[in-house]
Image (tube, rainbow, N blue to C red):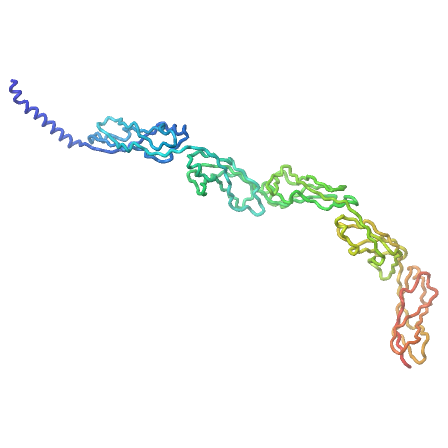
Length: 501
């Protein structure tokens, strides 16, 4: 029996081997061996370590690792990237000098019958590490456009005006400025606006990494420039010996801020009235500006006038006097009546001028025109004050002489030439008076002249020694009955033609 089995064992084993080979060949043909590469994401562990050390990876490293898997096709096709795990540990990054991370923990977590491998160089990941630092930068404002004419930018504020940026060193040291742009074109009203800032590098190129990351509130105060004018009262009531000279405000222009519907029509603001009555010396004081309560006043240097007061300097001078003497021939008589004669008894008179020392010291006698005014005065003795033509508002007449002026009436008469009697005539010559009448004027008090009877007056011409031809000769008047004080105002002359008979 055993011999029979032993005799056939070889063939039986051979048959089994052949069967296995046939099965394997059939199996391989139906489910071949496959090699496949998949990209497996690399997980990050202990990422907080960078934050704790104020470090940051500034480059983008490859966060996948290629895994090559091998096995039967049916097994390989069951495998996905999620069946693998791999990680890098950020605790390896202890300072900026670390430039490489090693992928660790590469493992397959599935149940497929496969083998896997990876390239050794793929597990090394190059990194660039920088220190995180913080730095503060002021926010500058760039204004664009022009305000409406007459309006001024008074002030502005930025909230917050200092910006702290936390970033890697290479970024921080590259920052040149932080700027916010504000449009003022034709603006007339104060406003507040929220805007994003622009970060520039040191070459004034925009750093887009910070776009829309910094926002500030900008408050802008806009006002209108106006004149400032003082109001005074009592400047002419300082007394005889003092004169108001001038005033000057601390500033003559200001900027008013308020609702534009209120300020747009205001071009001048005034002080409240300051009364100078009775003041005898220069002084300085603060006066309140007369402005509505809803308007704020700033100086042209953009300083707020918190109490709405302005300093006012008043100049008042004590006047001095100066005396000038004149001869009577230097006196002018104004508003003379051609029918009156004026006789002044005095030979000299004086004027006392009052004014500012600086001005009155420069006055010369030749600049002064003294006069008396005889408008509508009657006959007789009159006492008239000497006046003078104005030398300007800073010089006044303090005192002057009073002159004794004797006023007489001048009366004119037309006399018929036939009343003239020729004396010392030459019988060989003929004499003819060329005018039918001649004029005679008497002067004296009006009441005396009215009593004068000219009908008894005698008129003579002495023609002795007159040769042939035309002659102007004096008419001699004789009348012993003229009232006292009445006299001939002027000599009388008449033309006489002398011819040979």
